[in-house]
Each structure stands twice: as C-alpha cells, then as structure tokens.
Image 1: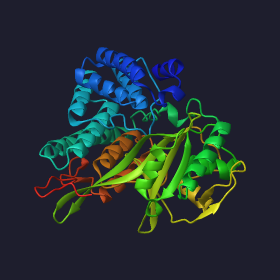
Image 2: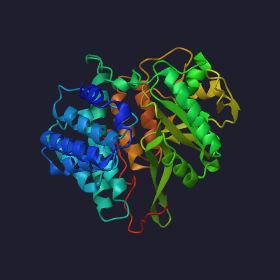
Image 3: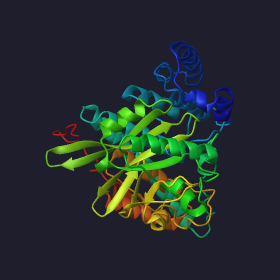
Length: 424
C-alpha cells in the first residue's frame, strides 16, 4: 500500500516533527513532481507543495497518497474516516480536484458522488458571503441529489423479492485496525504528559471515547486503538490560552485544529458560525492526541469534528483508573459508553465511526448534508438504519418528500440570501 510505503521511508515521528527549510524544499519539490505526474494538474501539485513548504507534511503527503489511490485504483491505502480529504483547500483548488475526479471516475459510482458532495460542501463553506456561494450551494444540492437518487434507486431494487441482496459497504481499513505505531505503553506515557500539560495550564481535561472504553472495560489503553481521546468543556476553556499552550509547548506539536461550520437561517439572512471542535496534538513519541471541545446545549452535551457531531446525555466528571493514571472521566461512564458504542462490553474490531455510532447527530451545515447523504448510501444493506437516517435528514430540513422519488434534496437547504453575512 502506498501509505505503508510512505511510512516505511518517512516514519510518522519524522512526518509530524518540525523541519528546516532544506528538508521542506527538497521533499516539497519531490511531492510537487509526484503530484503533477499523478494528477496532471499544476493547481493540485502547487497545493501539495504549499503544504509541504508550510511544514504540514501530514496533510501534504496524505493528499499525495490520496491522489495516487484515486488515479490508480489498484493501489489501495488506509483512509482515516475522521479526516476530510479536501480540507484546507481554496476554491480554485477544490475546482481542480473536482476536475481530477471527474476525469478518473465513473459518475454513477457512489464513492465518487460522495466525494463530489464533500468538495462542493467545502466550496460552499469557503465562498460563504461571496457571490460564488450561490453557485456552490446549488452544486452541493445537485451533487447530493444525484447521490440520493442513486441510493433510493438501489434501495427500491433491493426491495424487489427477486433482487440480489445488497452487499455490505466496504469499510475503511482504519475502522478495524490501530494506527501504525500506536503502542498502549507509549500511549500511557503520552496521556500522563498531556494531562500534565493541560492541567498545569489551568484546564480540566477528561478522557472519552476509545480511551474511556479502555479504562472502563480493561483498565488500560486498548491494544487496537487509534489515538488518545481527551475532552474539555468549551464554556470552561479560554481558547486563546489553549491554542497558545498547544502551539508553544515542545516536545508537543499541534498538527491542526478543526471547526464545525454551521450555516444558520437568521432574520437578516444566512449567518455562518464556526465552532472550534477538535485540536490534534502530537506527542514526542509520535502518539496522536485528539482534544475535543464539548458544548452544553439544551439537554445534551456534544462534541465533534468538521464532519461529525456526537451527542451525549449531560455528565459531570469524576476520577477513574487507567493503568494507575487516574484521569477525570464522565461520572456516568457506562451510560456514556452505551450512547457512543451500544454494547461496549464486547470488543468490536469492525466499528466504524460514521456508521455504527448510535449518538451520531446532524448539524446545520453543508458538511453535515454531505456526510449524511454519503452515510445513507453506505447504509443500504441495513434498511432500518437507512430509514432512520432518512427521518433524521427530513427533520433537519435536508430532504423533503417527493411524489415520484419519495425524497429529494430540499430546495431551501442553506438557501442563498441577498442579506447573508459572515457572522461569527
């Protein structure tokens, strides 16, 4: 696999370290040439160069590997289901990526249609508040509509008693295997150091998700985990102070942070709201730590990424035991894990965060529409889950009933408005 080859030549600890100008120039030039040969597009190659020169090796090399996988279908690689493949691209770069995909894919393929949805959602977010938003939000509705029609057609075919049953959707390899280089003992050290960093800085971190699961079920880090999951309550967190701490605390390195972008329909027009969601921190050992901000809203507490939102019942914090570290954790840990995983007492080695998480919720943003439509296409072999997601999309205003197709993308979803602004 291409990704495995990259990690053999360039270990993860090197990729996520800081690099001098010579290294950035040499590897950037090599990545530019490889991207140009793969995509035949100077815009896409320059974007890879830009990331390498900015010392963002993880994103630059991941983008290069992604292009190779899409260009040469025989080369497969692990794809992080939590990572947006086109994140951080400018509108011209997104247009170039769209052209690349259309040159090398079949429009009837669900995976390609899903990728087009993510690209148009990204473009709509990037151009919000400009005249180009009208075109991009219309394109998102068209892309999402094409994938929805395709999926509904397949669902109708499957309902025919004579039809062959739908095959289970192929899942990303990272949904069933740990991150290369993840060591439970190394993760324990990274957890101690990260807790010390945050607590010394005046913050109150707690464990969640896979890290909490390991603590409650096994009393240690999970052998097959992917990274360390920590949380902070947003209303207790000074973001300026947090970012200063994360960006200026060697040997840690903050690789990137993500916001969840909402497009809200206000009386004065559409309003954009970017909510900081997760910070990705690298420990000196190479262990990755995700620090999720948790928002208290109505009767739930939610956290998420640029793509997903997970909702939990309100919780307080209390210490728990994880290999003698005693971090804070949700006091209702078993309820919290049930909401996240369902039956969490039995190990699941094929758990997929986009398909199997019971508490996955929609949010009012273009990326949520793209994610929901792609998830629906992946759930057709699970009719009950697919029907539940249709109901959620209808309740969110993403889709509306249609006398011929059953459902269609709502013409009003994230509608352009002459009075729209870039509100925060």
